[in-house]
Image 1 (cartoon, rainbow, N blue to C red):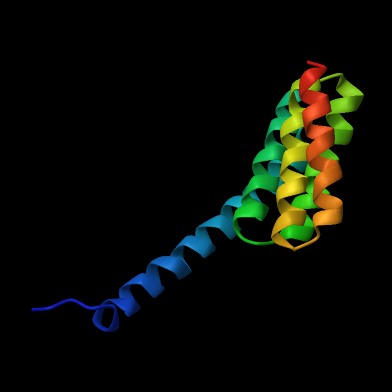
Image 2 (cartoon, one colour):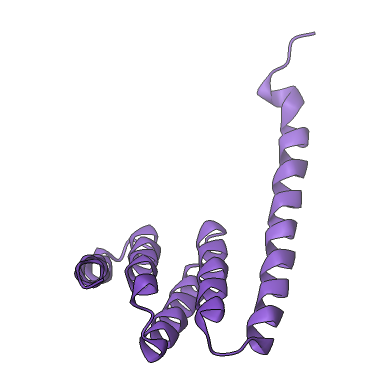
Length: 117
């Protein structure tokens, strides 16, 4: 039997739909975890995980908002190690949206923050 994309596409569509459902459920559980979490570095890390999941599912507005929350909390805690990656994530989100005028300054902010660690 010869397998072509025409015979295999239903299988891949099911995998894609299952994958997006798992991401949504995982984001929801992480959001609940963040609501209950103390203001510490673990919360910063959880915010980063959520933002990356938003980024990977194409939800760029929520990714930027969550990376921004991560940066604000990291600054409040003095957790400088989180700031370069969060700024880089914002740059990636802007780049995927085609907003290069916003992407470049966030990439530069990421580089600057990395040098300050």
